[in-house]
Every structure is written in C-alpha cells, then in structure tokens.
Image (tube, rainbow, N blue to C red; front, side, top):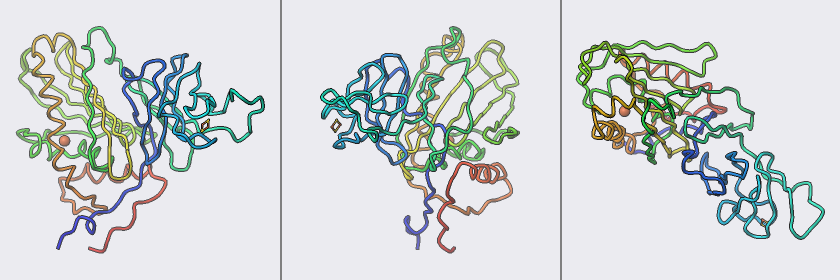
Amino acid sequence: MAHREAEHVELPIPNGWFAVAFSRDLRIGDVQPLHYFDQDLVLFRGRTGEARVLDAYCPHLGAHLGHGGRVMGDTVRCPFHGWQFEGGSGECAHIPYCDRIPKKARVRPWDVLEKNGMVFVWHHVEGKPPEWDFPVQPEIGHPDWSEPRTFDLEVPVHVQDMHENNNDPVHFQYVHGMVAPLPSEIEFAEDGRYYRIVSTSEQVTPFGTFEMSLIRDSWGIGLSAVSSAGIPDAGLLMYSSTTPIDAQNTHSRWLLTATNNLVDLAGEEFMKNITAGVRDDLTIWTHKVHRARPVFCEADEYLAMFRKWTRQFYSRPASEPAAD
Ligand code: FES
Ligand SMILES: [Fe+2]
C-alpha cells in the first residue's frame, strides 16, 4: 500500500541565498509582508534605495511591521504605536512619545543582496553570516539584451526537489518533450558551492545550424542560470531562484532575457514557449514524494552527485526514511 505521508521523507530548509522579490516590484517607500523559511518577515525599500528585510513582529506589542508599516528614512515605522526600526541594524531608532529607547527594542535584521533583478536574503538555520556569494549576470540589464520577462510560481514541493531537475537529463525527454537526452559534462567549483553542466549538440536555429551549448549553472540549492550559447552574437538566459516558503512549499521566480536580434527574429511566441516549459514539471512536483534513498540506475550519475553535493547546505540531516 502506498500512502503519501508514509512514503515521503521531509527535508529541512536549506541554508543559502534566496530571492524574496523582483527588484522592479519594490519601489522606494514600499513595505511588504513576507513569509519564507517558515518565518514572518518584512521587506521594505528605504529612502536610501537599499532593500531591507527584518523579522516581522514588533518587540513592543507584536504588530506585524509588514501590514501597515511605513517607510521613514531608512527605517520602517510600526503601524501600532509608531516605533521606528533601522533597516540595516534592526535597532529601534525612535519612539515618538519617549526619549529613552529600551535596549531590547530591536528586531532581527537579515543580510540582503540585490543583483540580477532580484532581492536576495541569506538564510541560515543556525544564524551564521553569509558564507559564499554569487556573480552578477552581465546579460541582465545589458542594452543588447531584451528587457527581462519575469514570472513566478508557487509549487507544493521542497526546494531541493525542484532544483534536482537540472541534474536529471532523462526527464527532459519525458516531461519536456525533447527527442533524446543530450550528452553533458558536469564540473564542480573548488569551493563546492557552484557547479556547471554543459550539454552540446548541433542545432538548427533561425540563424543557421550551429554547435550549441546549453549551460546550466547552479549556486547553492535554489539559484540557477540556464544559458544557450553557440550562435555568434546571440544568446538566451533564464535565471531563476527557488525560495523555501516552508519545508513543503517553494516560491520560484524566473527571469528570461535574450539578445534583441534573437527576439526580433523568433518573436514573442518563442519567449512565451520557453516560459511555458517551466510549467511542464508542475504535475510531477505537486504529487511526488521525496525519496531520501532513491533507487538509482546507472544513468542517474548526476542525480547521485547532486544529492551528495546538497548535504553541505543543511545544518540538520533529513529525518530517517521509513524502513523500505
Ligand atoms: S506594537 Fe509596534 S510600536 Fe507598539
Ligand atoms: Fe524540468
């Protein structure tokens, strides 16, 4: 008998950098409630232009700063009694009706990085500071590349199971309708946080027939860039971040850009078809269980490597699977 609860092993929430917003959705003065990593947070952009993330609940009487809070300078003002909290330090900077500020009047600040059109926060189960970084993608915002299309999706699956797709060449055939898996090479960086998979094949394109590479880069569990290269002066980039809402749900954000010459020639339909491909996996993700010890066959080498690689991003191991 197969029961989802009995077959499923729950993975903890991993450590790393995760996107919490598209930059374009957060203007100066915006305050938004967030729920990620099974925690309540507030996101705002202060007058300095910096994106800020703090724990959500006010140390005074516990109002949620993201529901009715207001930006004042680089602080967020609590909607309940007007205490103001610094975006960078989380310290209370001002109580409008008291001169003395209690020492404990602070909320926890989160480390924030903004690049590649997204706002990222560092999540670490033990509260350790950021341990690694990830690069700027020069294509995003470059004048020769199209204004990025963005879309997002909430999926009831653990963030790792979503990311695992990248290392699963066979599924491209069955889920995404590719003719056959492409031969590919995997390369891990020395510091271990990053890896790249490159698949090469000859492809017929609107510009002619070329030896094309599909490059899949990953930084930690959740951040990835898929780029297509091989046509001189033309290219395509799909940049994505998958963020744990909690241990069972993931919010993924995608940003798609291509060189203007490619978009002009292939048209909007082409861009739409690419984004539609992401939805092919949805049914599988929504109904699958997580196997802590999958039965692998010899073609699953990259999947096995991926599972081993992911362990470094957890402070706690996964719960033991039920005996099978
Ligand atoms: S609850 Fe925030 S100021 Fe009172
Ligand atoms: Fe997929």
